[in-house]
Amino acid sequence: MAKGELTKNLGFRSRKFREFKFLKTKGIIFSAIMVLFASAAILYDTSQVLHHYRTNQHVAASLSLFASVALLFWYVLRIVMSLSSDDD
Image (tube, rainbow, N blue to C red; front, side):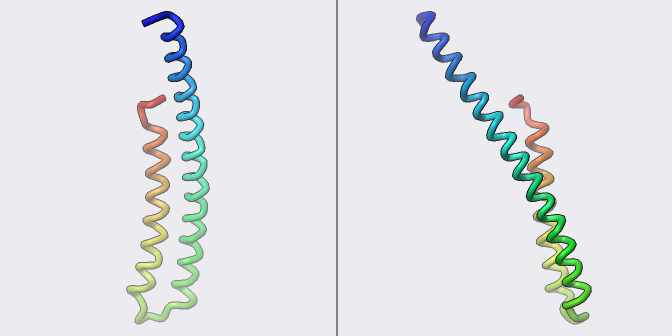
């Protein structure tokens, strides 16, 4: 492999690495925003359960809260996985 070809390959890999780091950072920021949104959704759904659901609508109320908690869990998990990856 020629010397010029080697530096071209290293430059290409370096650029790809910077792009990957940028995308990873954007993913963490998006996940953090979604954690805030999911937290707000839990508060809203809890208010809906307390004020708008009747006692015989317990299944619908619990599914509503479960969906919000699952969304929050998913994005917290994405943040943890992204921060603990070995691609640094």
